[in-house]
Amino acid sequence: MILKWDVTIPELTGEERRNAYVYLPVSYDWDQERRYPVLYMFDGHNVFFDSDATYGKSWGLGEYLDSAEIPLIVAAVECNHSPDNGRLSEYSPFTFYEPDLGHITGRGRLTMEWFVHRFKPDIDRRFRTCPDRRHTFLGGSSMGGLMSLYGALEYNYVFSRAAALSPSLWVAPDRLARMVRGADLRRDTVIYMDYGSRELGSHELMEGQFTRVARQLLERRIQLTCRIVPGGDHCEASWERQNPFFIGTLMYNID
Image 1 (cartoon, rainbow, N blue to C red):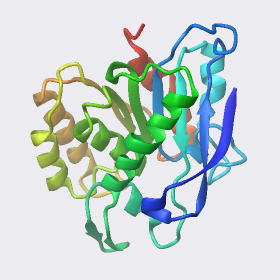
Image 2 (image 1 turned 90 degrees about the vertical axis):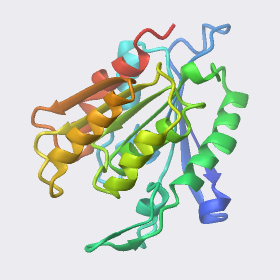
Image 3 (image 1 turned 30 degrees about the vertical axis):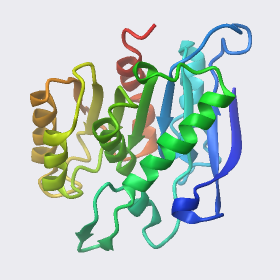
Image 4 (image 1 turned 90 degrees about the horizontal axis):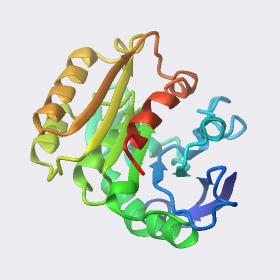
């Protein structure tokens, strides 16, 4: 079952309304005593419904979780669709300059503060969650994948696991490296990170940057699952095919 309602993020877009989604597992209604881990996701409009997805194709995550009977709640929020690089700004931890995009003011911290202090408490209040760190995850793709890494690193006291699909590692790579080195990480942190073989050439030196970030994460002694996806591309159809891989990593050894 997927519920959908409107939310506002005053710190970012004032009273402008955007969609929030919550997936409840198949056992939620009949197993009244059970509590569930929660995966918080970016670009919520692309996660469940083709009719809401930016390019008419979603991850189909609800159907996958239903078919596999995964005991997981997923809470997702629509991105900022402002043509003035609203999504890039909200989903970047860093202010940066890109010749084709111009100057982008990074408001990723504001976004994460809203997730941690507004959205998560609301989800924990309304649904039967396991609100502790061990059972609280992040997930996203592209800029949302970068935000998932950022959230797992800088808000590690809240999120124990994260899935970063095709993360935008080209954004401020030096600052990202410093963040990985300096983050206060617990050893039980789990990160899934992948990149499609067909998209490695989408940004200059991406293959090397993906390798560097993976090495930096391993040097921090966290538990990393890292993949180059054969034939993988930068689109929802490709990310949908990764549902079993990243969900398997996030849920591994979770009771």
